[in-house]
Structure formats: structure tokens, C-alpha cells
Length: 318
Image 1 (tube, rainbow, N blue to C red):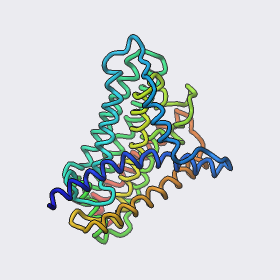
Image 2 (spheres, rainbow, N blue to C red):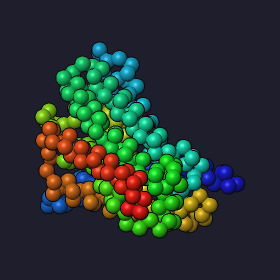
Image 3 (tube, one colour):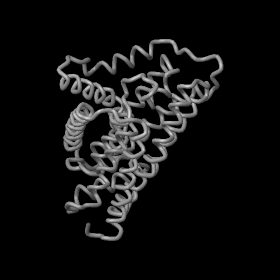
Image 4 (cartoon, rainbow, N blue to C red):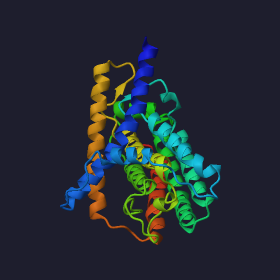
């Protein structure tokens, strides 16, 4: 009976991250519009957009290979699996033993690699431009992410997300300089990986500024729907990762009764809402930086990640 209940809650989490992701994007867009004194789209507009795209025919270039057609499914699957492994409302679920930070980084890297290959497959100038810029961002974002992973694993003694969340939630860690650096570095990496302002603007189609959009311009129909769903799920993944690593209070355990797990779910949704509001405010008050400044921006994340690991490794109490 316990196994059935654990599998049921794991299935709930897998579906929950998929269903909440478009809503998170809708909330960010709505808050940004309200700050700019505009009415803005409905918070459920991303669901309508995905449904409309799913019903449309996919137009594929005549010189597109099988890679171009398979990439959206691969990207969506990799991002969804990574997001479903992050403990959002309860730790110790049936598949949480696979929720290793290094595995999540690998899944996200696989999705990025598939997107870049598909962008170059047709041979358009926009695809090559976007892929090269994406690899430039990845060359700095991934090492910074690994530094953050090593810092957290040194503190908790493991790379398992469930155990890290339980450790941070139950142990008197206190205020540490190393964790502050890691937290800021993770925020910078999350902004860059999700193509948000100031690194990229998800709503622009200007060739001088766009990165992610340049790689997916050739997609349409259900293929574009999968790409958009993966993008929304990736945003939710990073927000959930920040919550699990640094703000896991209120999270339940697998052995907790259903009522406590429901409370943990509600607390997670509230945290996501606060994160969406803060993201919208940040994107409103900060302007899009020049492409050549992105390396400096991500370089700061890499240095902070390295400093956080050094502080924690050399000075154990800091």
C-alpha cells in the first residue's frame, strides 16, 4: 500500500510540474504588464497558445533531417524528466533516488545540445547564429552550475536533491557567505538558461539580440508547442531548484500523511508565485544588456560559484 501511495504521489508531481509551468509563464507576463500599466494577456493565455499550436500542422523544410523532427520530443522529454525529479512538495518519493544534481545538469545539457543541433540542421543563418550564441552562454553557465552543485554537495555530503532539501530544512545551517554566493550564482544561471532579461528577451525577434528564439524560428505546429512547453517547464524547474536548495521550508516527506503533502504543495505554489512576481519586477527594472556583456554577467556567476566552493571547503564555518 505504501508503494502504491508513493507511486501515486510521484505521478501527481510529474503531472503537476507539467500543468503549472504554463501558468507560471502567464503570471510573469501578467505582472510585467501590470507594472507597465497595461492590461496584459490572461494568465491562462499560454495554455491557449499551446492548444492552438498543437492543432496546427507542422511545416518542415524540405532539407530537414530526422534530427530536426526528433529534437522537440527529445528536448521536451529531457526537461520534463529533470523537472519531475526535483522534489517540489515532498521528498523521498519513489523516483527521488534518481534526483541527482549532476543528472539534472546532464539532462539540461542534453536538451540544449539537441536544440543547437536542430537549429543548425536546416542551415539557415538564424539557426547558426542562435546555436553559436547558445553555446557561448552554455560554456559559462554550465561550469557555474557545477560549482554550485559542488558547494551544496560539500555542505550536505550528497548530491541527492531529496537529502539536500531535508538537510537544509532540518539542520541549523545559519547564514553562510558561501551559500549567499551560491544563491546569487544560481539566480544568474537561471536567468541565462531561461533566456530572460537581461541576457535575452523571450518576446523579441530582433536578430541582433535574440538567442533562444533564433534557434526555434523554423519550428511550427506541434513541434513549436513542444518547444514552448519545454521552455515553460525549464523556468519552473529552475525556480523549484532554488526553492529545494535554499528555501525548502514547508516541504513534506514521503512518510507524511496526505494532508501534510497537500500543505507542502500549496506552500510550493505560493513560493512559485512570489518567484514569478520577483522575476517580473526584475525584468521590468533591468534593461536588456548587449550581447558582448553577457560573458561578463555569466563570468560573475562562475566566480561566485568558485568562491562559494572555496569558502565552504577552506573555511568550514563560513
